[in-house]
Amino acid sequence: MNDQDPTTSAALSLDEALALRRSGEQQEADSASDTLLKLVIFELGEERFACPGECVREIIFQAEVFFVPGCPESLEGVINVRGDITTVIRLDELLALPKRPASRNSRSSILLGQGKGMTSGIRVGQVIDVVDIPSSSIQPAPATLPEQLRQRMPGVLYFQNRAVTLLDLDRLFADYARGLG
Picture 1 (cartoon, one colour):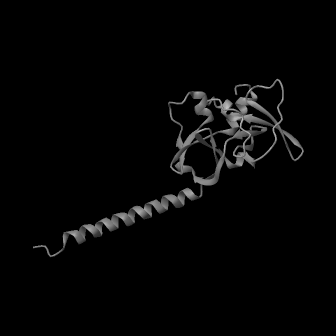
Picture 2 (picture 1 turned 120 degrees about the vertical axis):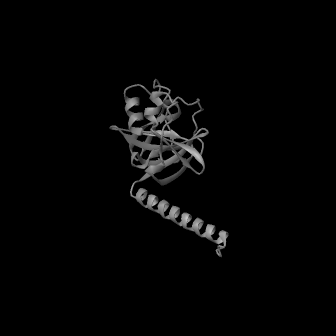
Picture 3 (picture 1 turned 60 degrees about the vertical axis):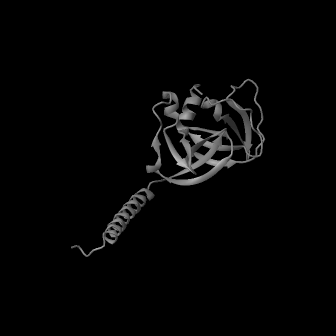
């Protein structure tokens, strides 16, 4: 007859399994920690997006945007950033999202972005956070997206239990400069 209590034996093996899993997760987190990506996460309408931090020079929370007649609808206007005149692009237009009125309310922000030799302000909704995310947590963009959008949105991640679409500012700016915006 076996004198060992089966529940003790099972609990012990469960504890061992959990300890092994925790050590594996810790090793995975440690290996991912050297490949952290700094991201600026923001809302645009009901959706959340992120831009790589190295592409965002500054977040401007309040700036007067001056309308420029004759410009495409995707160009909201220009702003003065410490003496430099900079364009402000409407990101919802570039991404073919449902049209929203130009939002100049206090929750709206402008990301001063740079990529592919171009610097411009990008009108976004509320900036949610600037965070470091392990690159392993970014998943490829869904194959159901149209090709042009998939090239501009190379990945998806989850932050605060919501999907966040990663944007490729280099590609967005290059397309905009070629007139594909």
